[in-house]
Image (cartoon, rainbow, N blue to C red; front, side, top):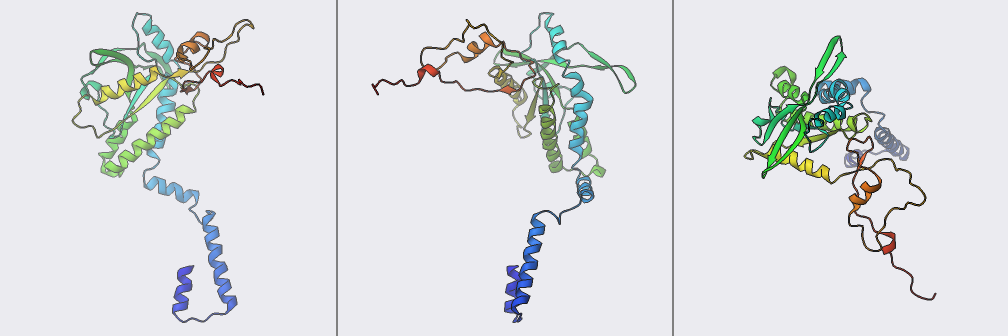
Length: 299
């Protein structure tokens, strides 16, 4: 609007006061309509733009991965781990760890990326009748991860839809380059995270590990990332529904200062369940109520 007024003034155009007012109203009206989004693209145009830029690929793959796989295996994961643990074996985490490399390169075996990650055995199979296939088998693998002579074990696998993204980037007709592929991986990660966070069946039964693709020269990057996530889970507190106590029982509170062993105090009253359906929360150490300053004056 300022540019138009300036051009008219410098061009020597003489307009009446009403004409200047009309121009100002028209420009202001256009800016208002545009700011309200009334001049934006229609849903059909938005769909065409998304289809042209391949923006719906990662979104669809994330939903397919959830509906066709994670929603089926995660609710039954604890049962399979219980059967596995009945043989005397023990896992460092009861969650399914899903690896998502940014470069979408998904090897057939994690040992190809890091020799510290070694296949141990498979969990008991889950068989379901799906889409006309009788007793379709779903399996999950347990891996041993070694670092500094310490061994961890967990259920581990790559997100198989990323392999589809990588193979699409190798096809010229797909219109995928390296930059677009990385954007699709990030979109897949964000979409899958939102889907799983809103799923009661899958809550606290998974862990998404987004792997950086700029770790060339580090042969043990994968094992370091996995172990870091496993150690982080050891410090998490899973909140369960509060159990009712008798009136004579009281929660132990230190006489003064901070509660030193907060996890121990919680586990004494609220048993920790690794596979709880409640959200995972992190707490800082609280201050005891008895450690507050006390009134010592006569007023």
